[in-house]
Structures are given as structure tokens and as C-alpha cells.
Length: 293
Length: 282
Image 1 (cartoon, rainbow over the protein chains, first blue to last red):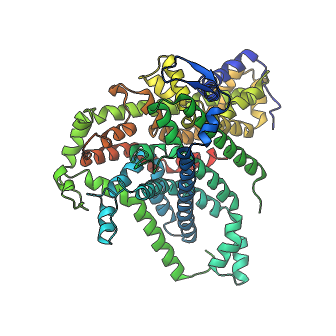
Image 2 (cartoon, helix red, strand yellow):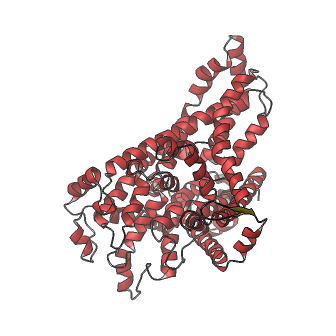
């Protein structure tokens, strides 16, 4: 779609796009190209010598069992976080869509964790699960489970999954609710007249019609779990114990800033970039086609 | 609702109440913990009801900060967060709206190139280019400054697209009429497009304020000077005190303060917030 009426003052047009373009070039495109460039170099930690090594950084990355383990862990973390937050959000939204009185109140009460920073959400759950003073750890102990995320890797993983999913439910809930409310009532009424009960209607009509929203949220949640959860990990477990919660974004950070492995960190950046680009392309292609059922 | 099924309605209320409970529980626990003296928390039995140290804990933390974490006053961190969040929100909106205006209403060479360059930023979150971006900011001498905290984050593909979509729906007649009346492009922008975009700007502002306030990784990298710490990253320094258990009542008070402004924004501007969030993803 293009405008018929346009202005032709070129100088002004360039001046208007310039701020955005300059910032993009300086702080986005240039650093990204630097990452690409460094990913094919071998550099010592002091920057005194550098050598062009082709794809050595990538081959050593993908033959490094620690990196591969981190990759697998990130996928597990993303799948668990996405499934948990989407599942709970869909359940709540379906319930909120059913009731007439009080739906707005419930919405207000459920959506505000969206405003909480991931790092803060992490700290809240970190406190509740604190092995010596946390209320949830206390309850688990009463049930006979000795929770300790300082020592037990899977406890730490569960902790960050819960924190990440808890924060994301609100966002998914809003989109599911909007999606549910956009489904024409006549379809549901027709199904009800034909004798389909609420669960059957949900399974055969509502859920399929909701698929564009579900798909969109799926991609958004995977991106969230991959990239936005850095704060949760860094503020609470710091990737530990024994690397059990070192997800990919945390690894780029710790290898680059703490380990000063420039080439390796750059190679990891490039892999992450490829993942984001892939996800964005998938998202846009499907949104263009509107995922009709 | 299609038919009346009382038991299902009751079930809905129960499930939703559980949802609200799960949502609220961490906040309640945090609030309670922030109102007790340290001995009560360390006794090993978490209280479930607020204590009497509310004022004392919050004034300590706001005025002088946590001693074990270097004593940076939380009041100052909140001010830094506010400045950063406002600069990011205002900056993103300002540069995006003029860029979208140029792309929609002007014909100039490289127009589509500009569009694609902006589009690419969508694919390059800070997290994937940490080191080189840090290097650029360091070379420009922007470490430890409000500019360094905000400017690298203000390029925005989503905001530009949002305004572009909106401008495309503005009737052609308005631009024609303005032109016949002799209004130049700047006057048209200021007197017609800006007032029309008011709700969009407000909705976007709500989302971007929250985004800015909640920045974590970037402030962590570019601030080494305590006077530029933001509250969300400051909490991490309080949790990660070496060799000892964090001073939990102060950490929890700081967490409450870190959540307060964005949560208030969501609750009181709910309509704008929902609009901003849903429009942004179109």
C-alpha cells in the first residue's frame, strides 16, 4: 500500500530518517558485523595478536561438549517454560472467556506480572525457594523433599523455569483472551444447538480457530525463553550449580565478559543471531499467511 | 455464554481464583518479608503477615542503601531507572515517528533500503551482540552516562512499523486538503498527523516505559560507577553479596520498589497498555 499524495523534499526526508538509521548502523549493524568478523578470528585476551582462522571457532564450538550441553539445556528450558506458561494462560483465558461477571477484574488481577522485570521475578522465586528460610522450600521439606537449588542442578533448573513461566503467563493470557473473544459467537451457538458440550466445543471449534494466536505466542515465548531470561539466571543462580542453568545467552555473556574468550563468544553470538533470524522469518512468513485453519 | 451450566461457571471461578492466587503469592511474600526485621526472617519460619518494620526498612533502603552491597541509596537507583526509562520511551517514539513519516509520506532514493535497515534491528537483540556493542559504546566514551544507558537501545523496528501502519490508514484527503491549503510537510506533520497519533503514542509510551525500566543486561554492562546504577540491576548486587546470606528484608524492600512504578503503570493505564501490547504485535 502506498500513499498517492507524497512530498518531494528529499533533504527533509533524509533528515527525518537519519536519527533512526544512524543509531541502527552504529549500535546494531556495526556491532553485529564485528561479531561476524571476530567469529572467524583467533585473538589473545589482550588483543595483541589476531589470526584469521576461518570457521575454527565454530567447529571447536560444536565439538565442545560443554557448549552442546548448554544448547540442549536451553532447548529443554525453552520448551518447559513455553509449555507451562502457554498451558496455564490458555486455561485461565478459556475460563475468563466463559464468565460474564467479573472477567475484567480477573484480567486486572492476572496481567500485572507483565510489568515485573525478569531479574526481579527471578529474585522473588529465589527467595521463596531459599533452602533455609523460603516458604516453598519449607513446605517441600514438610512433604519430605529436601529442596536445595544451591547444590542440586535440577532444583535450580526448576526454579528458573517457574520464575520465567510465572512472569510470561500474563502476556499469553492477554493474547489468548483477545483471541477467544474474537471468535464469532454464532459458531459456538451452532455447535451447542447440535449438542456439543463445552469441552467438545473447545476441542473441535475454539482451539482450531485460536491457532493463529497460539502459533504467534509459541514463537514469542520461545524468543522470550531464549533471550529475555538472562536476568533471571544472572540475578539468581549465575548459571550454577555446576553449569546446570547455563543457558546460551548466559554463556555468551560469561565466556565473553568473564572468560574473555573473544572469538568463541563472537561465534556464540553468531549462532544466537542465526536463531533469532530464523525465528523472526518463521513468524513473519506465517503471519503473512495468517495461519488459516 | 451459550448455555447455563452452574457447575462449570463455579469451576471457572475456582480456576481463576487459583490463577490470581499464584500470581499474587510471590508479591505478597515479598511484601511481608520487606516489613520484618532481619531476625524474624532468619529464624527460619517465614511470616505470612506483615511486621512492624515497614517504615524503618524502606527509609533505610531508600536513603542509605544496603551496607553489605556498597551502600548505594535505592532512591538514587530509582531516579536513574526513571531517567533511563523516560529517555528510552521518549527517544524511541520520537525517532520512530519521524522515520515512519518519512517512509510513508516521502519518495526518496534508498527509501526501501532504509526500511530494511530498520527491519533488521528486530533480529538483533542486545543479548546476541553483547561484546561488540559494549566496545562501540566504550569507544564513544559513553560508559557511565545516561546517554550510554539509553541511546543504544532506542532504535526500534516495532515502533516504526506501528506508526507506519497507522499512517497508512490516515485518509489521503487529509494530506490533499493540507496541501491545497498550502501546508508544508512539517506543518502537516505537526498539525494533523501528531494530534491523530495521540492514542497510539500514549499506548506505545506505556509499553516502552516498562521496557526501559526493566532493562537489566545493558545497564549491568555500561555502568561501573555506582551513581548510575539502576534499581533492577542493583538488586543483583544485593543478592550476590560475597560469602554471606543476602540481607533478605532489604532485598525484598528493594524488589517491591523496583516493581512498583511499572506495575502501577499497568494497573492505572490498563486500557492503553492492552491496546499498546496488542497493536505492537500486528
